[in-house]
Structures are given as structure tokens and as C-alpha cells.
Length: 111
Image (cartoon, rainbow, N blue to C red; front, side, top):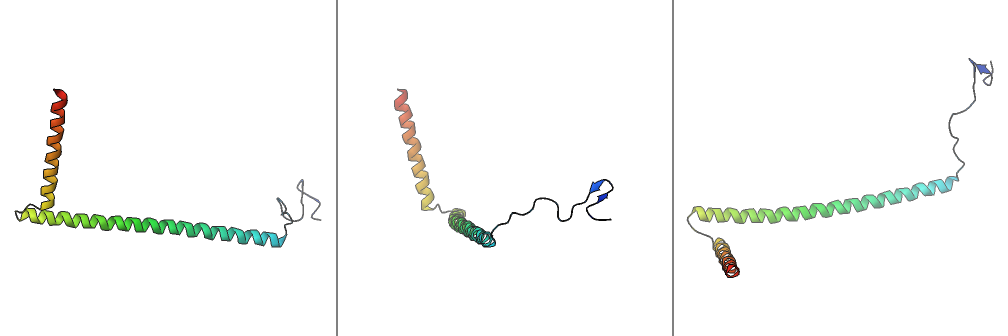
């Protein structure tokens, strides 16, 4: 039997099925591929720069928090030894002044 003849009611066609590829200039296709690769590398570079900046900002924040934690540890040690650090005294007196000022304002408004 020939390939073009009927086989169980269907006609067989030689070759591949589906869309035939369009005849594209090979040089143009290669240039498009190169351009796409350049753009991909540029996007990747930008993404890595963004991530590096994000990591460095997080590292700076971690260092600042560690310093703050160390300061609080020193304050706790001083308070355990029976001493009140000057920073805490300043915070307490500043808070007392603020509360006394706000209560004075409330009293003057209600009069």
C-alpha cells in the first residue's frame, strides 16, 4: 500500500503534523535571540543589585538593634547593682515633665 492511500478510512499524509514553521531569516532570528539574552542578563543584574541593597539595609538594621540590645543589657546590669543609669533618669524626668505639662493644660482648658 502507498502512504497516500486510504488506511482504515483515513488518508495518511506524509511529513509532520501541525503548523509549518515560517521561513525566518536565520540571521534575524539569531540577533533576536542575542537581544533577548542581553535583556535577560540586564534584568538579572538589576534584580541582584536590588537584593544586595536589601540585604545591606537589613544588616545595618540588625547592627543597630544589637547595639540597642547591648545598651539595655548594660542598663539592666546597672539597675541590678542598685544604680539607676543617667539615661533612665533623663527619660523619667522628661516623662514627668510632659505629664505635668499636659495635666496643667487640661486644668486650664477645663476652667
